[in-house]
Each structure stands twice: as C-alpha cells, then as structure tokens.
Image (cartoon, rainbow, N blue to C red; front, side, top):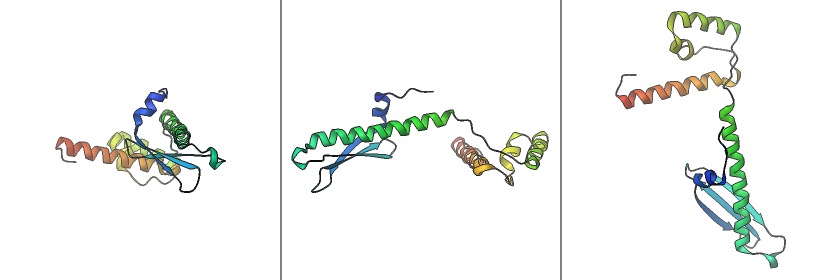
Amino acid sequence: MQKITTEHLENLIERAEYHRVPNTTTTLCSLILKIGFVVNGQSACIDAVMFDEELGKKYAHEDAFRKLWELEAYRLKSEDVPFVWHLSPDDLDYMHGTLEKEGFDYAFFGYSDFKDIENDHFHILRERYLNARKKLANYLGWDS
C-alpha cells in the first residue's frame, strides 16, 4: 500500500478558497481538488476581540487538510480490500457449467440473472467491465 505524505496530498489540491461568515469569527476553507471534489474545513474564535483572519484561514486549512488525509487513507485502504460477492448454490452450479461451455466472458458477464448476490456487487462489476470493454472497442475502432 502507498504511504500518504503531505506532499502527496498537496499534489491533489488545485487551490484553496476562504470565506469568513459575515459578523462572526468563523472562517471556512474549501480545498478544491484537481479532480473537482471539494473538502471543507472550518475554524472559529471564541472571542471576537482576539479574532485574527490569517490564523482563522490557517486553522480552517488545517481542518480541511486533516479531512483530506482521512479521505485519502480510506481510498487507499479500500484498494487493498478484495472484491467479494456471494452466489447461491444454484448460481454457482450454473456458472461452473457455463464456464466449461462458453468461457469466462459469458459466465461472468453475459449472464445477468444471478439472484442472490450480496449488495449487487456482481452487477456493478459486470457493468463496469462491459462499459470499459465498449470504450476500448470504440477507441481501437473494433465492433463491440
């Protein structure tokens, strides 16, 4: 698994935008990532007399950056988790028979009537595979 570094996270950020909520000591920071996703952070000062706009921006940025770190850690960790689904015994028997007769593509992606798949993971994987195959065929000029 990749290690998360400050430099890695900074490379994900396109820009930071700041906003002070009018008549308050609350500062908001939006980290706009290069992929278009936005991570928000905030800071607030208890005493308006002690409010410092630059410190407000600094702490709001740190809050947003901490959230980005958590999101990136989750994303990287989720790549390590194996993709698992559960098939009923009937569906497993059908797949084994189909594999022998028709091959991998049809057994896993041509047959769409599996009934007992947990959380529809199989169908999501199947759709992603079929879409990627179509895009590749179009790119290469093949008939799909």
